Length: 111
Image (tube, rainbow, N blue to C red; front, side, top):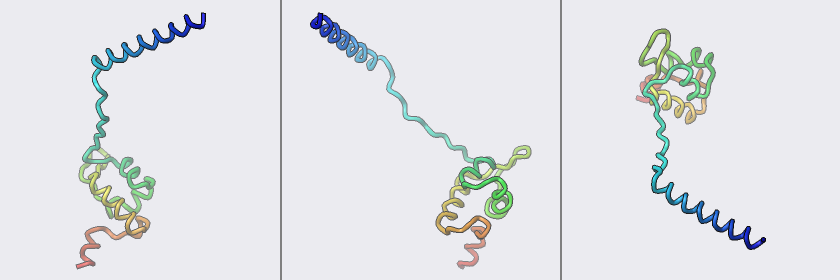
């Protein structure tokens, strides 16, 4: 009886391997997940990228450090690269957004 169970398991294992080989030939390989990032971000997404709340965004960032590039209805949209540059600058300067000087003023003061 013990020998019978062992051979049955061996046969099941062989069938399983054969099935896997057939499936590997027939099934397409999984494609890498493609992350699509839009060119413009809405306010909520910009807040998320900057790791700040909506109030902080409207009070200290919008219109001063970031300017909308598009407006659809009542929603403002911001350039992705500009948002990421601002966050990088924020991390490098290690200052809260309210103490940061707009980038164009930084370049004037440096010159």
